[in-house]
Image 1: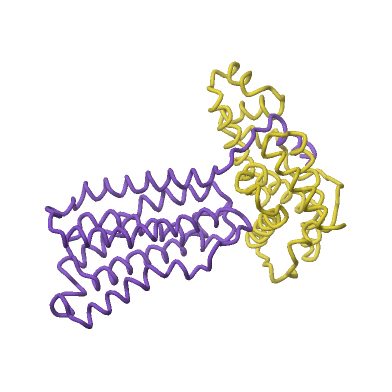
Image 2: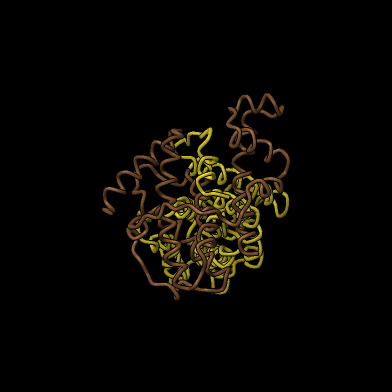
Length: 187
Length: 213
């Protein structure tokens, strides 16, 4: 896979996603997911870790990419941004599970997007159960906006929250889900 | 949970992201942090009575230029360190320039012995107050800046922590400058410079603990 063409493609999807294009966002996360899956699986396999563990980590990282997408500057390259997050999360994961980056070889930023693995598997996590642990406001906001696909305005009307507080609840809720996934993953 | 399902969830009803969100947030954090530090100063030691002489005003301005240059430079770096893979615009040592300049000025002043013996030029009348107040006034600004940094995605936590500490320390120095009765260059170099550097070191040590995401 040509990493230069993938940079161009991923970056244009990212820019469109930042402007609110949901389809571009879905495509971006799918493509990024396939690359990061190959990356995480490859790294973790070398120290005898399971594919499920890699999938859990992948899901946490996808949520992080989503909730922290405002830290990407449209004028910068996308691949290094993605790689910095993936590497940070991998190192953090290894540290928490008592391995270190020394067990794993050093790679370059382009290697992150070099391979594809689109075989999504079930992670060991249950979204419904994770959502059940959120505060009611966040849970409701995510349920309506993200799972049932209601508009923010409609959700605000149904729940009696203001539109901005619906948005804030969704954002904070997703961040909390990422935190719960991390906790769950580490037992 | 299936990853494809998660991606669908994340993509539904996507909100657009405004440009400059992080920069705006750091601006607000700086404004609030400075106001808070100033209030703490007013509530504890209070402003210096009668900054009326031209010399007093000159030294206040000097202390402020020193501290504000560190607030500005540090904040610019802080914003960048919250963005993954964002390069710094200039090498990190540029931030030490204000320290170098004030240290040289202080040393020259010491050699020329313009304002009495060395002990007085270095320790002034309230060095202990200065040592205590700058970090003390920096505590709440530090908390505010760490909160702001957590809204980003820092990947080098000691560095981001150190930047937050540096900026918080410099804000503490801005607030303390309005109380400080010691108008001496060596004093400023030692206690302002030292106090702010101390805050940066503490911030760097606390960074990994406070900023992990």
